[in-house]
Amino acid sequence: MKSHSRFLHLAAIGAAASLAAACAPSTTAPPVATPATPQFISPITPQQVEGKWGLAAYHRPDDAVRTEKQAREGCRQPYVINAGPSGGFMMYLADESQPSEVVSKQTPPGPTYIGLPDEPPGAQTDREVVRFDSNVMVLKWVDPEVAGRYGTMVYVRCP
Image 1 (cartoon, rainbow, N blue to C red):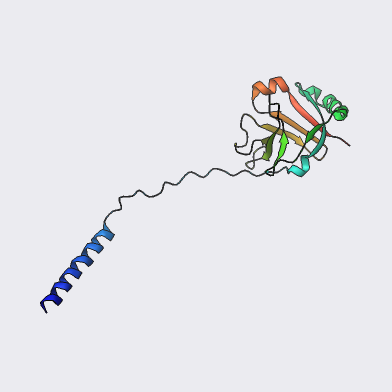
Image 2 (image 1 turned 90 degrees about the horizontal axis):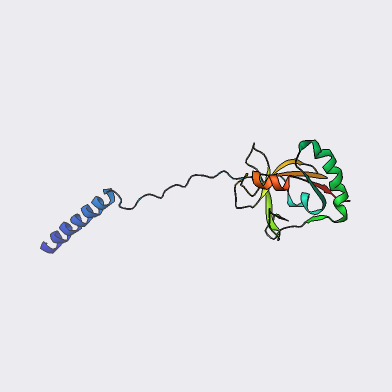
């Protein structure tokens, strides 16, 4: 009987220790919640912009209509927008000699931008979509210095 009572005594001590450990505050910190970043949508699909475009640019809003006509004439040497390897489309960024994969992006209800997919809408390397339909796309660079050099870009779909 002595071993039986000793066993019960040890079992009671073990149970009390387990209970105390379960009630003790945890020494590991709870996971820190990262703030949610707004997800953007892509209102303009790659299929809508892929193809050949005439391209011209203006600096003064008064020149927009004239520049659209000039862009139509640019179809003799079109600006080609191809599909990107990851679901976007290929366009040149400012001062780059090779095209980069870009996407359209928007955080509703804000404006739509075209730029690198890993940057938020409105990043310095983006272009704001001023106008877009199936035949005309007007883009303005977000970076004021780049916008000052390149102007507002007018793309007119080639026939």
